[in-house]
Amino acid sequence: MRGIRVGQCKAAWSFVSFGSGGGLCDAGAGQVQPKAPQRIARGVWFMTGDTNGYSNTVVIEMRDYLIVVDANYPGRAKELLGITKQLSPKPVRYVFDTHAHGDHAYGNSVWTAAGATTMAFQGVTDEMNHWEPTRWRNALPKRPDLQATGEMDVQRPRMSIAGDKLVLNDGTREVDFLFLGWGHTPGDGYVWLPAEKILATGDAAVNGPRNKLLDAYLANWPKALDKAIALGPVHVLPGHGDAGGIEILQGQRRFLVDLYAAVKAQADAGKKPALN
Ligand SMILES: [Zn+2]
Image 1 (cartoon, rainbow, N blue to C red):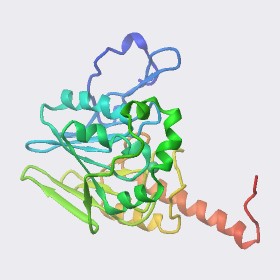
Image 2 (cartoon, rainbow, N blue to C red; image 1 turned 90 degrees about the horizontal axis):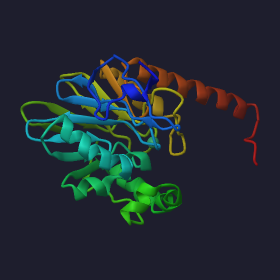
Image 3 (cartoon, rainbow, N blue to C red; image 1 turned 90 degrees about the vertical axis):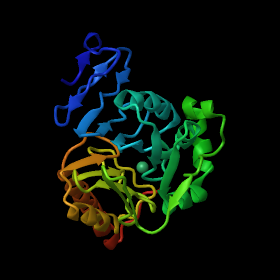
């Protein structure tokens, strides 16, 4: 179904089942339309970002409200306000930032303006306090959606999670927010649905050549992934790239271990990074 022509892409997307592959809509002039939401389980949907540097999104339906993972960039957040209404009439109550990077968290103010509560582990706020507003301002000239907010800094998550676990259980579903250690960033949060065995990873695991290591702790990241693998997820919903199974976690772990070993071998041999 990949690469179907624009004539086959109706204005409103239709649902695709998990594993069917979705399909990219070629809208011409180099534009790519996002894939339709994938229904992973009852009341759980996954969307790839695909365009404009957007990250993936997970929507979880509770008895009275929706949870969204991640806030995304402001442009995508505005699109998602409409998309979530098509998925369910329930309001978005919580938006969880898996980490502090702009493609996952810069849309925070869009969601709070719509009445949602943004939330993240304390390490996410700490990272923002460390790096912002420098990164926001560096991104501003390149991103019309940031300019449209009229803001000069990322809005911090309204709710910070202390410790390493928060459980939401409204009687219809349990959702666990987990901190498994510093991997991709010091504040990495995972979302685990124990009954459905669904794990949303943020960029702690990506599917494909989409790794960004600028805030990573390479030696510890595989240990965090070991904990994620030990959960035994059936569905893994990465921060970028297509959804899949536990092989996404295993592949991510293998990549990091191999990368660390290759660089360490060079360093041990006395090699130094090339300086431009
Ligand atoms: Zn990231």
